[in-house]
Image (cartoon, one colour):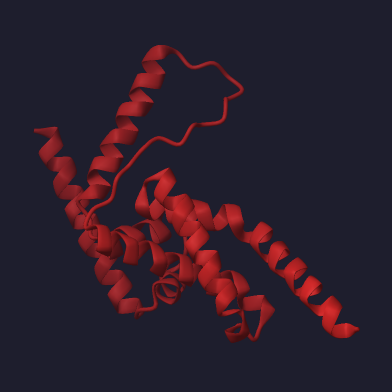
Length: 173
């Protein structure tokens, strides 16, 4: 009898795992690939990989970190395979205050400016920079998520910042 109920409990546990982490993983992947459709596909791919390897997860407390590493590696592998990243807008939630057309245009131009600068970076530089500077993660955590050393993360971030500064300087001229 327990064999009949266990698969149901396992499926329940998997559904809870996906629902608890879905939004965070989607946002993480979107920030790396910059495209909603690709991020949706890669989020699904991430959860498929994770659920196929759930027996490797010994400690439930480390599930978020483990899943985040799978997501980062899946996104980086995708960018390597595709050879480039595409960007599109995520529809924003309506804000409590109204925005003038000039403010909306300025915000859109700033977003485009940022996205153009991010396109100059390699997938690993982009991932390291976003995890460190946007997500605010410490270098140690970025290294764990990217499965590399802290020195490598610092190198990726330094290279990304140098490229980004150069891009900004060229745009100012």
